[in-house]
Image (tube, rainbow, N blue to C red; front, side, top):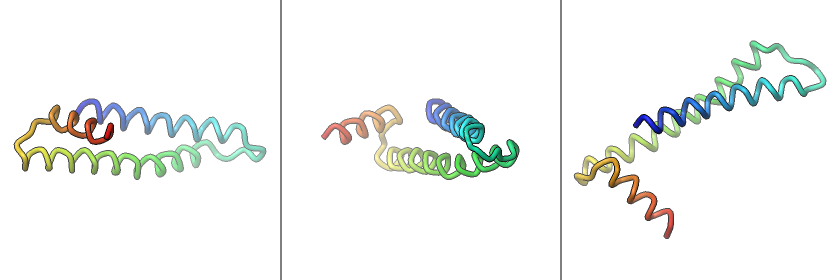
Length: 81
């Protein structure tokens, strides 16, 4: 669980920094506060997507009596096939 929270935080931070850097390279300089707000707006759907996938995985694991580690291993095996 901590890994997914860290991933969401890092992806949000990357998104904010990317928008802020991109705004400095534009010919017309946008307002930094508006750029920050736009970057947060783009981070929200990514966070909900990651939370949804993780929650679905945990519900599926609970129904089948598997642990979180077993579900990660199962997902990795399915990805390799």
